[in-house]
Length: 279
Image 1 (cartoon, rainbow, N blue to C red):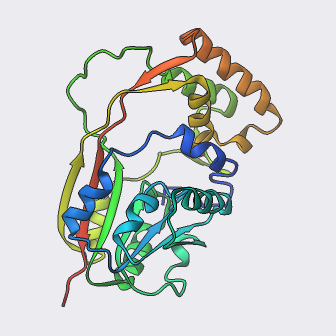
Image 2 (spheres, rainbow, N blue to C red; image 1 turned 60 degrees about the vertical axis):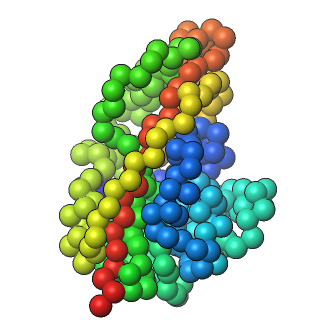
């Protein structure tokens, strides 16, 4: 959990409606890559902790008998259920709970996944609990955008989204220290997952990198949705200045691209896995 910060239920309040449109998808084929690496065969159970609107669980569900998504934000779970129905995913269920509430009577799992959510938790406590929830030989999976620098890509066909200027605008409204729910992240979010997970007794670390997809075209509405999908610029943080902020945000985007069209290259997806010992 971030230093000096305490979780509260407003962390992503109001963000669920913007999440799918605003967030870039994980690399195409990440689910098949992970399924092949873990030799998944359609049996067993998947637990997605901090599942949000089902971004990872829904494409992974077909590789399991049952997939369970856990998230403390009930709006995220409503959106996940809506997406599951739209995609015809019938073996998923959704539980409103924090990672710290586990095991929550959910039983045993073959795979437990955290997709850019582990850093919000009491990591040592949660990793130890997950180890107990996994069957012998079960797998702890951490999924994130690849943070390592890559070679300079070819020039984009359109203007790139002005994320730095969007961040500057957010700071003008909300202050220089990153917001998160009712608190602030003075030192950002923690990393070093490898040490935490090894300390919990996992082994056989493996790392996969799934290449990014093609360049995507993004509209001003997409970038607005991206902004409001984030914990540090969730709609509720702006209070009665929300309309002013959105007006200034859209004006910034129009100055950057008068046709309201941007180009962006999604990042590669990094998948790290650890196994619970069989003995």
